[in-house]
Amino acid sequence: ILILGIESSCDETAASVVKNGRTVMSNVISSQIDIHTLYGGVVPEIASRKHVERINQVIGQALKDAGVTLSEIDAVSVTYGPGLVGALLVGVGAAKAIAYAAGKPLVGVHHIEGHIAANYLEHPDLEPPFLCLVVSGGHTHLVRVLEYGKFEIIGYTHDDAAGEAFDKVARAIGLGYPGGPKIDKLAAKEGNPYAIEFPRAKIDGCEFDFSFSGVKSAVLNYLNGCEMKGIEVNRADVAASFQQAVVDVLVGRAVGAAKKLGEKRIAVAGGVASNSALRAAMKQACDEAGLGLCYPSPIYCTDNAAMIASQGYYEYMAGTRHGLDLNAVPNLKIGQR
Ligand code: ATP
Ligand code: MG
Ligand code: FE
Figure 1 (cartoon, rainbow, N blue to C red):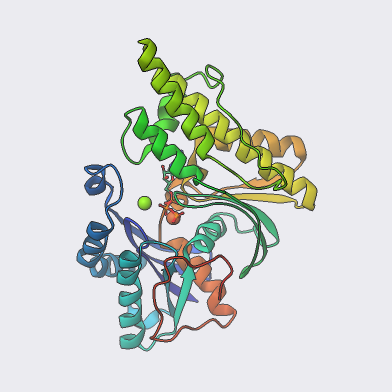
Figure 2: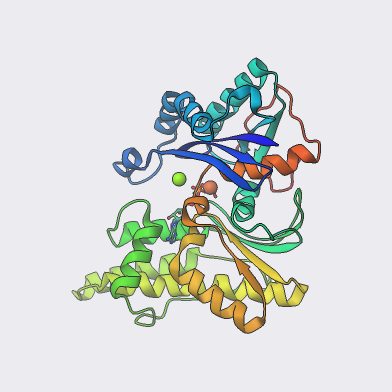
């Protein structure tokens, strides 16, 4: 079974062909990062327009790279939420047009369920049930993946997402957008993760929930304090200490939940899953606890369409079909059908 996946929820225009949910035949990603960097973040109106300019070429290239024609595709899967509405609409519109013109089934996919499915692409033995730590630009969730299309959220962030906190702190120390990879690099190169003590927030009564606005504010206060006292800031130490605080919380919650719920394996998903400190700390904690661990290669951690085609395959096999009235749903919930 060949699925064409299409993704346009934020600032990547992407298309991919995946075989049987697991084998990537092509993976084309046209990133708009260069443009949005000028504004310090994603500008929704610009994102939509760039998607319109690029989507047909990206889809054509994905088919070409895979060496298939549209007629050989079994279904078209597309991200229909959550994300920027104008951006989502471009992918949804393109997918509907192709599905209609080629007479193929249309399967709408949840973007975050796609991030989770990215783990299937390189781990042939990974099958539900497993616990997934989702850490992306807009989401931080602990999710039990009960079946390919069945999810139970056991923890979530009460304020900022992990990736969002990385991006905001990066901006505050002048690293630019997107900040996650830059903090990772600077911290690894010359930062001391224990130079500054930033808070590791807990939420009363919600053992598996997260809060990252406190650590972000603590970094901003620290920077202000240094400025007032005329102390020079060691940016690498700030980056490493902030990163360590976030990583400690993520690892503690994920491993704690797995132990408590009797899960055997943890998958990590979303852009922050490529963070080197998170990977190292997860590895150590999972080894100690006797838990299996997996995460996607960096190219499948951030937005891509192979993950959408993978989740699309399992939806397709379960009988999910969307009509040509499929619409973008900017606040689509995980597991919502
Ligand atoms: P969502 O998936 O929640 O809608 P998104 O699609 O914008 O949001 P992703 O593409 O999953 O998010 O990931 C982008 C985020 O990942 C950004 O916040 C970026 O800073 C962060 N990120 C990417 N690489 C790293 C890294 N090495 N370390 C930390 N954060 C990282
Ligand atoms: Mg992006
Ligand atoms: Fe994403």
